[in-house]
Length: 76
Length: 222
Image (cartoon, rainbow over all chains, first blue to last red):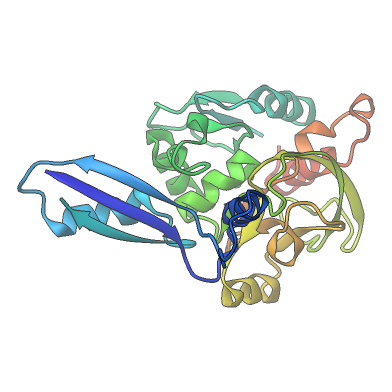
């Protein structure tokens, strides 16, 4: 079973990479982009009987740093 | 004083800090590989060196913080053994939770590699007893992810408890409140982005860093 973990910076945490991408989009002439926030997509292939608690523990213990990041899990 | 340097795949300041420790303590440190699960007994200092452990994969320090030897380092730190993390070592310490906050990409996105001026904020710690509070020292920095970040309550607590050991005296990387080095609540764990181990002998351009190790040696005892 495929599980997708989406890791994003918490609101309010400065995202210098997002700012750089934002600036580059402006440089290419794309108007109307108000903000850019970057993040990570992590795809896991796990056994079908892997429960939500186990995936949540993976996120908290390694995949996300909850000091600065939020995460959400999508099951395929 | 017996010391140990933890070596991860991708560490690149492990030999610098080993030379510094041998120069100050007179004894070569034990070099402990990341896959080990136990530390030598009777250590007066465990050093986590700079570098790019595990290629900075996932987040800087994230994989190293979950390596077998770091579990032993966390246990030793909780028993009171002094632990110093420099640069990548600081990133590893925040990832273990031994130190609060996180180190993010530098605000201007550039890799900063130069000497910077630091203010010694707290000279009454095991690591800073050979400095004067408010003194300006110069250490090199060499990092891409040194932008210290924590929530305002945590920052207030660190400041209120004297746990900001060093602060940048000039703009460097966008760190919250200019924080360059922080201590844990017990005061036996210090993480800092600048490199004291690169200022040990006059030939390095100064000896400001040497006093950090001398102070620790004096506090811990030979």
